[in-house]
Length: 314
Image (cartoon, rainbow, N blue to C red; front, side, top):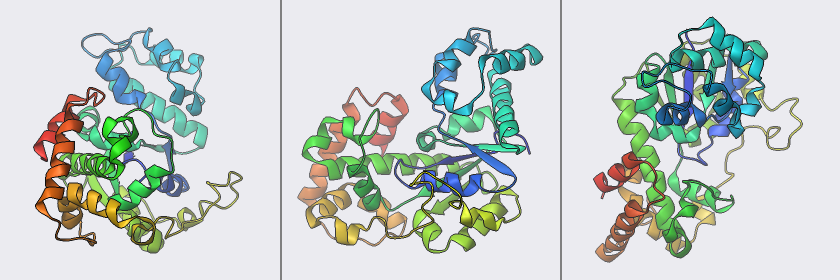
């Protein structure tokens, strides 16, 4: 029952925020907000020795992370945590942060929701072998529709040159990369560690899916999960579980659907998502392949692992 207890991951715009709110409502577990700093500081060895031991220099680096402020853990608490865990491995220090967040929420178990961690499962599993992973998967065409309504930053597909001329193909490659990365890593961990959940089933059969998720997490089902929105004041947080917010069948143009399926049709088939155009002319698939190669060479794909994945799925 050690923390981090679970990581909720998935291609961005797949509904991970909804799942975070649902699980966070459970009486026994709190879900921390997005925390990209967890692997980032470890990878860059910010405030760490080469052996991964924490030094006092880590604390200012940690406090400088914009996301960390939302945890409401101040410098004094971090210094006290470091003082009681000397010498402290980075993994143990982060466990202490999770534990402290749980204390503020009145819950012993603490997880985290960071969608992009779907591409970092192997790193996280190495750091915390007992942590569970819940991978939320949504039909990529609905993910694309959701992306169109958001401001895109960092590694989301909007930063790539191909987005301007062919957003559907670019979004398809981005969705495929995230989903395949998560599935390939997660399936190697085994069913006690890795769990896949479909967004479509979650919003149409919430009680059944929440009960199954609790079983995976080793927790009793708590029906307050279905009422997470009650008492919330922010409009988005106050919205109950709702299906049909995006529907590619009625909201996506035929041309965009063709482009998306030419790029990621094989994955749609693997996931048993129905195809609008199961048989596309070879020239469309070839165009998608050329864009994939261009996208893979883009220097803004900062993680070498992502470039490797893109080439592997050509």
